[in-house]
Amino acid sequence: MTEFKKITKSVEIKYNMIYNITNKIIMGEFVVSPILMLTADTSAVFTSTVVIAGISIVVGVLLLLILIFNVFGKIVPIIERKSKAAEERAAARKAARKARRAAKKAAKKGEIVEESSPAAELSAPIPMPMPAPAPIVEPGISGEVVAAIAAAVAATEGSGAVVRSIKKKKVSGRNPWSAAATADNTRPF
Image (cartoon, rainbow, N blue to C red; front, side, top):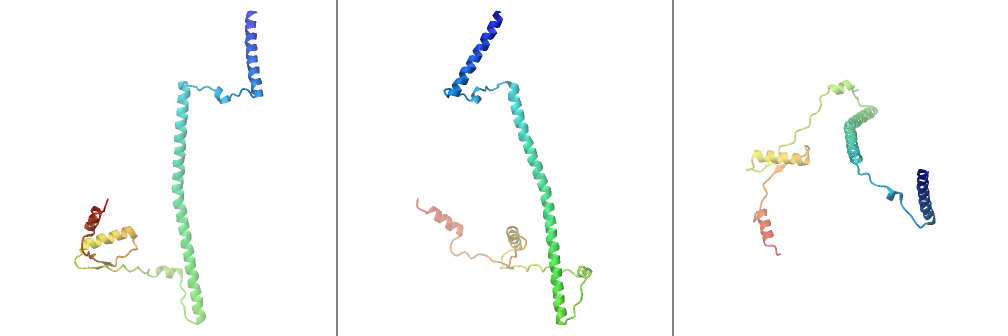
């Protein structure tokens, strides 16, 4: 019987404790956050599980991003090629329409116009662009300097840039670097 009394006494204490806490919470006297009742698990298994899960999630998301960017890297050039081909087809259709209009206009005026077939257009010689004229170079400037200047202009401005002339700069008075040094050294504090 004593064992039974101990159990009932324990149950009675817990009941009274819960009753008193519930009563105080309802009355607004005592507020305890359920988060404050939690205790941190400091076991090595729990800690290692959290660390391994965190690392695996980060690596997994990183691999997913790499996969997504690789797929975009393969899709974008395909889309660009298709759009460029569509633009070329549209330009060819526009040129064909323009040629037909010109032929109709010439026919109305009574001029004799040869019908050009696509095969004839393909066999016609393709006009080559004229090379850019050589730049006018002041005497005393070597060919290596001209080549270096032309290469620098092509690198900065693109392959369509043309160097028309190369002249030595006329420096009146002092060297510009010397003038800058003098101005810097004589500037008041």
